[in-house]
Length: 136
Image 1: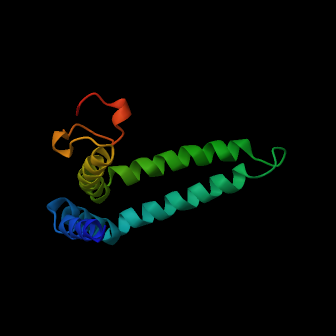
Image 2: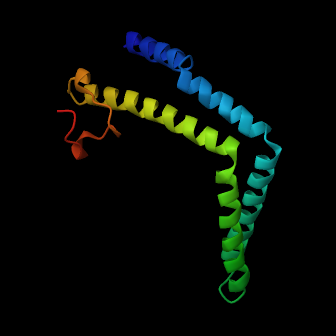
């Protein structure tokens, strides 16, 4: 069993040298340094907290118009966050990394189910073979 732990650690180290991991890290750093993006994220979080606070009030104390406006505002801020170039770059890089990690997990899951891991085919595999007709 120790060999499996060591292989998992080796895989983790290899993952951190993969271009998709590096690209995600660089995109995250760029997003973290983008002052406009961080201000938008802060505004989004404040709107979310205000929505939660208003929603948690008793029904007779809740200001439905305020809640409606906060929901409109948060959607607008969210759209601005997602339109930011640094966020778009991060989202794209993260999607590629997630695809890799999910594929690795699917291969391990296949092996744990007694299937041949060499038969893994990359087509948005979730690792849940019960809903898939692609690998076997």
